[in-house]
Figure 1: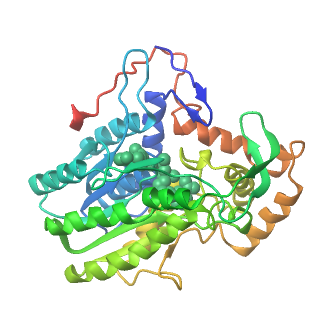
Figure 2: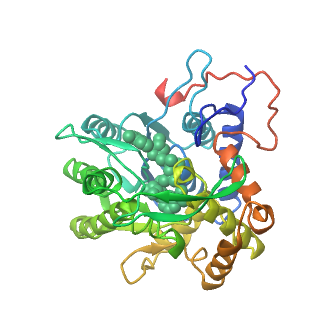
Length: 396
Ligand code: NAD
């Protein structure tokens, strides 16, 4: 079929298999153009199909020559519905990994469940014995608690007071004001349950109990801090509470892993266009201003450049892992540079619908968004009849 982008709210409900495959190949080529990483050899990535998790998997495989198992929640194609982008990304990743002689298998299902944890442990035992690195990169709107069955939904809201600020609709390029009502205590509790560290700890506990973590194994989960302008809705809001919980969990897991000489970290990453971040109010406007400023300064990075730097310059340098005063890895260091933030902040106060194109990289934002679903990618013929039914070989 001929596959075009189709929207519902802030998500695209179609994805292009050839475009997704090209995006994955571009990321692989980037990593292969960089010096090899003396890193982990057996890597489990939870949330491996898109965004930071996919880039982590690609970096581990093509940067460090690692065998990988990827866990994610994606949908195959059916009838005239395309698969999700993460499905196509994984099919392309596995194919490239196999061609390179690397082991790559995937598990599609709810990572919050006990069943998927057990299935993963069985695969590790059967195929590898033990893992060297566990990357935890889930971003989910909901979680069913595996013990109690309670269904939690995360919300993006401020805490304590209403937050009003500018936001942009990147489809219409209109800058407007948005007001978001504060979260209830129940909503805070729910968001911490979905995006906090409880499930990460459940994974590490299960892996450790099953004795499938190698001596010296590491685990890393991803967090975000960002600029003062988004603090009320992000870092000091519901998701920020969840990230505080995730960061506290890293300290707990770090102590726990000492038993096997292992380490646990949270890495604070740069704000980037992913399926999750495009749904956050205010953040897309900040990201488009940030992109423009960082591109002008020659500092811009995408997920793959960020993850390569995380592995090569933080996690696997052969020496101590460099962290901030709270024990966090900071690869948002370029985003948070004083000159970058001062320029973004000056533009933030001036930006409106009329000067949006001049002050921000709204075009780059929009293109990145489409590229998440395999559209607007060089080298792909979008008028060609395309097979939407693509197999992920390890799931066939
Ligand atoms: P993403 O939406 O691109 O990826 C989410 C991944 O989680 C996908 O692989 C998806 O399949 C998987 N997933 C979701 N629900 C699942 C479930 N129930 N079971 C199994 N897999 C499931 O998101 P992302 O932006 O790459 O976010 C990953 C992490 O990075 C998050 O913790 C996020 O807060 C953090 N982070 C993101 C940014 C950013 O700007 N995007 C910045 C810093 C940190």
